[in-house]
Length: 176
Image (cartoon, rainbow, N blue to C red):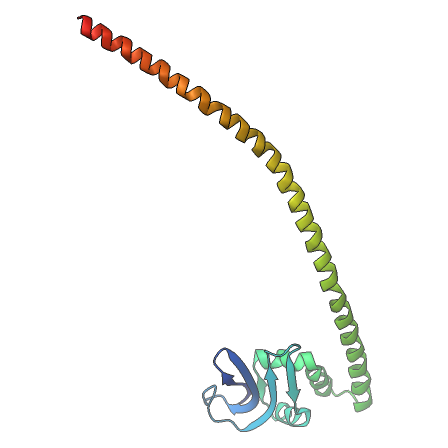
């Protein structure tokens, strides 16, 4: 059985993947039948290059994509094309659906581009609120600090009283 899967390449901590058609018995980074694409997760945005013609060929011949490869196909819209082809939809209809999908993807990207700005503004508001709360908390701390400074002055007096009591006890012992 043939699987469409990732083959890890690149340096340590810097992965780069090739999308390959390989026999399921072959090791992850071992022998493969054909190179059908690449995936670079480090680049921003992620770089995905696919050979659609060869991927569709392998899918028609029964190759099964792994979950990760399937998600990459979905990101590129290839899985939509494959699904429509499997259902027997005409080529014109497939192209129309794919164009609609591309428009939706562009709209999603625009809305996502706006969201980080909103998130930054929310974070700024939260930090301002936290600072305001911290200032409110500092005022009672100052009051408690002043109260604590007053208490130590009282404590030595208590010790003196305790010592006086012990002096009295010593005098009583000496008298006996």
